[in-house]
Length: 400
Ligand code: PLP
Image (tube, rainbow, N blue to C red; front, side, top):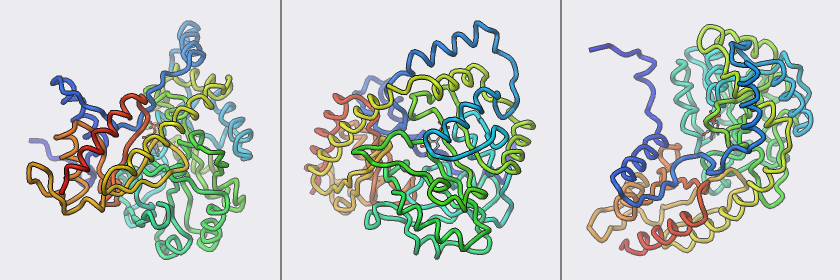
């Protein structure tokens, strides 16, 4: 039998992918499963973006590109950061990787050593701590519960930083909670960071365009220019442009860091798909008129879910600012019994019983580092969401 690496032994499988796989399996068996596990838009990629990809293929743009992106896409990214975030970058400060996930991995691979610590507010996106572990460093989770609207406070940040802290990860709006930081909240965190020059900031802005009720989006390097020289501002086309399968993510930051990330790519993946890169040029430079349409649909679904979940006995669901997730507490149900006699002893059991009995797939909160909670992705049809709420309410009412 093959002996696996110590690095891979440190890493857990992805709970969100596991839930999606299980739900799909049950569907294939003919069961009427509603999957609210996957973090993927149900919208199709806009037509003009697909056309740009077809054009690229016809024009023979089907060969290797520079490892970290074509100049045209880097220019589009530079323009995006200037237009939307008031941030000035040169193309030499831009990295394009095969997905936002790969941007993060390349950044960690390029910077982390054994003993380095990475501060990760919890609940967190499942891959952050695992990537840090894969790179041999130490994730430091900082629990941020519903009492602080699932956000990191300056006090908690100050307490988490040590001389070994290499990165702070910020993710706003957040996967899994949908919570987003205001400019003032970011400024308060920045004030702490200014006192600790060894800490770099990796801000994952994947859900920037998915904010509701007029929320004014800000990213930390924009709010505190003094942090520009130690911030990697990361973003991508997957979520906002409904392009998860195309695998394009990007980031901008100091040239030395970007150069090191390019070296990782030069010696591992080489370039992201050339066709996807041309499609992304169109996504960023082309018309943005579908964004408000997507946003309006998501906002409506968010309201539907928050209202419906708060009507389920024992569930408390805060209203998030963005992304396409809600993140309720199921603490009120722990200790209760199902009609069949099973004890709901954890969020994990709650999720398993809900799937078993009502065929609704959600992701339990422990996977995101905060127990007694769960995540629902509402990036699916209104009809499916409405039916899911009926089932969740029925399940909660059946517990005693
Ligand atoms: N960052 C966050 C917070 C995400 O939710 C995701 C996707 O689930 C990613 C990064 C990765 O995006 P991509 O599909 O572009 O790799």
